[in-house]
Amino acid sequence: MTLAIEPLHPLYAARLTGVDIRQPVDEAMMSAVRAALARYVVCVIGHDKPPTNEQHIAFSARLGPLERGKSPKIKGTETRVPYPEIVDQSNLNDVGEIYADDDRRLAYKRANRLWHTDMSFYEVRATYSLLVGHVTPPSGADTEFTDMRAVWDALPATRQAELERLVVEHSYWYSRVQGGGPEPTEEERASRPPARHPLVHVHAPSGRKALYLASHASDIVGWPREKARALIAELMDFAVQPRFVYAHKWRRGDVLIWDNLATMHRATAFDDRHFVRDMRRTTCRERSMESGDSRIV
Ligand code: OGA
Ligand code: MN
Image (tube, rainbow, N blue to C red; front, side, top):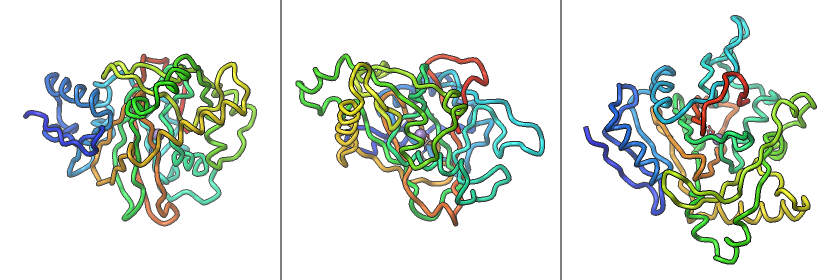
C-alpha cells in the first residue's frame, strides 16, 4: 500500500489513507508517515473500529520514546485505562461513569479548553501526541489546532527580531488555575515544578522556525511579570486567528497525531454532563525518561 495524503487546511493538517495502525506497519510506510507529519504536523488516520490500547501503544512507540506515567494502581482502585503509556482524556471516572460535576479531576481536565501544547511544563518536551477516539459525543468536542510555524512566518520581521532570544517559563499549575481549576496544594505544586524553553525554536522535522507557547506559559525569564504576561497574551491572540485554525471533527476510530513542537491545540465544549467522550492519548518525548517520573492528570 502507498500512503495517500489529503490536505485539510491551506497551511497544514492532512488525512492519511493507506495505513492502518491496527496492523503491523512496515518501515517504508513509517517513513512516509513521518514525512507527512514533518510537513503537515497534524495528521488524521481513520479506522472503522478504534485500535486497542496495545495497538495504540505499539504504533506510537514507532514515532519516539513514549511517556510513561505511574504504574497502574492495585485492584479495587485501578484506573479505567490501566496502561502507563495512556493518558485517559475521557470524561469518565475510574469505574466508567461520567464525572460528578464537582470532581477535582474534571475541573483540571477542562483546562484542555485553553490553547496549549502538551507537556511544555516538562524540561524534556513532548514531540508527538496520538489521540484515539473511542466514543465521541453527538455534537461539539472538536479539537482545534494552529500551526506555530505559519504563525511565526506571519509575524512582522521587527517583531520576530524582538522575540528571538526570549526564554519562557511553563507551569502546569498556572494553566490549571487559569482554566478554572482549584489552587493546587503545596505538595501538588512541588510535584511538578515549572520548566524553561526558548520562545522561538527550529522545528527539526521541517527545518522551519516556530513559536513555542502554551496556556502553561506563565513568565518570560528576566522580565517583570506584567510585561511578560502582556506579551504572552498578545502572541497567543495572534497565534489563534481563524486563518491559522483547523478544527477536527471526530469520528470514532480516528487516530489524530500532532506535533507538539509545531502546533498548539485545544479541546472545545460539549455536553460533558450527559454524553460520554472517551479519548485516549499516548505521548512521545524528545528523549526517553525514567518510568514514573511524571504523570498527566
Ligand atoms: C490532549 C488534548 C483535546 C481534546 O489530549 O492533549 O488536549 O479535544 N485533547 O480532547
Ligand atoms: Mn493537549
